[in-house]
Length: 112
Length: 114
Image (tube, rainbow over all chains, first blue to last red):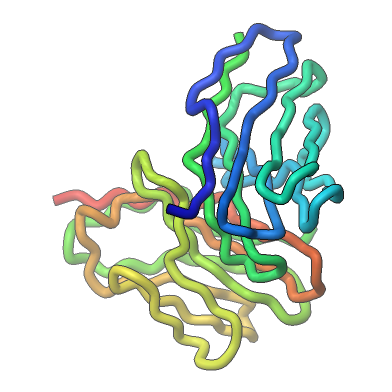
């Protein structure tokens, strides 16, 4: 079945450690996105990529980094510079410029 | 700042009541409009979308939304809600200026009680 796989589902890290969240899709979508979901804040865009080897910052990119070396994969690194990293992270993909996104099941990151 | 506004943070309805969730956006120019839904414990999924044509669009599970260009609005409606409609609903806008991602509202949590 085609879809997006995010792993792990739950992740615990100590403060000051970098952590990488995985996102893989087999939908042959060009565009991939990372959103952060906090209660009452909706979905806020962290980074997005419309094509391999290219990505753009979203509204809340500070403290995060991404790479897009393969069409299928768009990993997100939460660095120690992110002041409030505990959150639910959603990855999505779409055909370019359609807005019809397929979402993963999310990763809940807790930093202690 | 350009944005997407959802007026209600949490709506509580009894089964069979009618639903209307407000959504306004502040972008000029041509836009595509969406409602996404997140049922408890499930993936965010597309409920309905508007690209062009008839401003009244119908989606899954009896939902519909009306695009009113003059009001920059895209309100979601359902004549009679069911307990299974309990979920969080997100309005989203895609500007047709190219190479831009979806912008989401803050969401409205709907609780339907028996």
